Length: 426
Image (cartoon, rainbow, N blue to C red):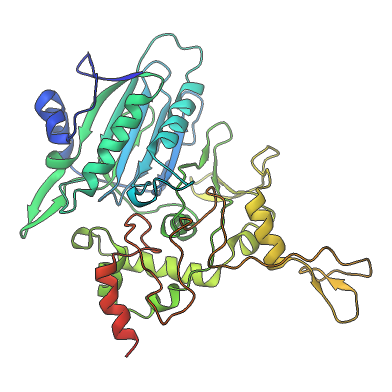
């Protein structure tokens, strides 16, 4: 349907966030109120922390486990809160750039539309039967960066909500000029993280002392180019779910691990001037994880099922038994990876031995050629690289050759990466 701002239906989203603020001045007031609030430090109890390209939805009327939804590290990304005022169902999503102008003619077009649709559908599902109330949207994050990346992400997201099949009231927009300050002649975001109180819907600036389980693994989805927004929380069971997902081995990992912190910061960050002090450490952990687990479909998700976590009596996340549901539907790409990498190998005796060590004398399975890690077409759902944007196998050329800023591991900014790579060849 349409976005609604200050009780006025929007015919078309303006072409700039400055234009939005100029047309609806009350949005500047609510944004200023948020940026002047004190930042709260949130502990682990009752918290569900989200990474980029993750979302979660709950209804506090039926979910006593979750008190706060939170996310941070929003520099060139945007955090969106969608809440139904009648049912109190609330969702938080962390969007970043997930489409490429260079690849729009390919088969892997991805935009914010799907992520917005999933978030909206989930909130509506938890609001069935409530005839009173409305949908309210709050968008926070992004600033006046020198490449206007935040502007593109924010406008893309607002247009996606504008096209959604619902009337959505834009209650808060804190981005661009209203979320920018100047520190040492450098533009800097005022709010990079938010918490959302699930019962009241209150939004506040936040940092987080504990970001939950498998944080490095979850970060690999972003750094290896996974495009889809994923729902990581089952509010009916109070379970955090992670995976399954797969990516390909990456030739550039070893080279990047050899670089200095400054090179990693300049190569892999979209906004190196404003990253936090622990950002490079996190990236190194992600790179090491990718190096140690080049085939996560085999080493981490061998049964193609999610890993589940629940809260214990102290409010900490602990591993949980897999529920009996349909989340483990096999994916053809993951199955192919398992067969190719961990499948049976033919022994010299004519018997064949499975990777788990069970030997049988029955006929060997049909030989399946392992996929080439550097050029085969990968279905978009689990493809870590765009189909025309592959890493090169030969290290006589730079292992990363494209300008796709949102795939920060796969495609660092070329002009930043080249000096580091050239120095490594001396």
